[in-house]
Structures are given as C-alpha cells and as structure tokens.
Length: 154
Image (cartoon, rainbow, N blue to C red):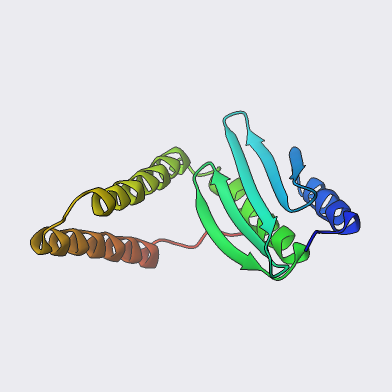
C-alpha cells in the first residue's frame, strides 16, 4: 500500500515542474500536501492520499474546498492538478475572480449550514420542500448562466 520512494520522487518532481511551491509528504508517502502560490493573495492547495486500493484520493482544500475523488495513479493526479492550475491562472485574469472566490466560499458555508440543519434539527416537510425548490432554482440559474456565457480559452 505504501507509495514507493520512486513514485514519491516522481510526484515531487512533476508537481514542482508545474509550479508547486511546497510539497509535504506525510505518513511515509501515504499523504501529500501540495501548494501553488499563484499570487500574493492566492494559494491553491491540494491534499491527496494513497487509498487502501492503491488509488489516489484528491481534494483541493484552498482557496475553497472541493473533493475530486479517486484517481488510478500519480500521473493522473499530476495531470488533473496541471489542468486545474492552468484554469486558475486563466480565471485570475477576470475582473470577476474575487467575486467567484467569494461565491465558492459562500457555497461551502451553505453546504455546512445544510448539514448542521439536518443533523441538529427536525426539519418539517414544508421547509424541506422549500429548501429543495430554492436549491433547484439556484442550480437552474447556474446552468442558464453557463449556457449564455462564452467559454474561456485555455
């Protein structure tokens, strides 16, 4: 289950080549934390670990958390991160980028609030229906905006 030192070296070199400013190997190559300082005020951080099935489980933890799930190997993780960093570098050029980060963080807070609501409260059927309608409306708004917005060049 342990990643060989050779695989660890490949991960380190590959991530450094695409601009990682810090790579920490934790627990004998089972857990990695990779940071990319893209600007003075923007650090993109990934955490990935080797699972019991010898797959890699990847999450981005900053500038906002999102889970990407299992990957077959280190090269897939590195390629995903390469594309993701390219997208961030491109998105940073937008005058809306700070609002995007605020929106993404608001969504994280929403997810946490919904979780606490259901774990700590007995929500009525009516309130549940209202919440689901509101979320469905939000998803539809996002879909409509995506459809009418031009795709960025990468």
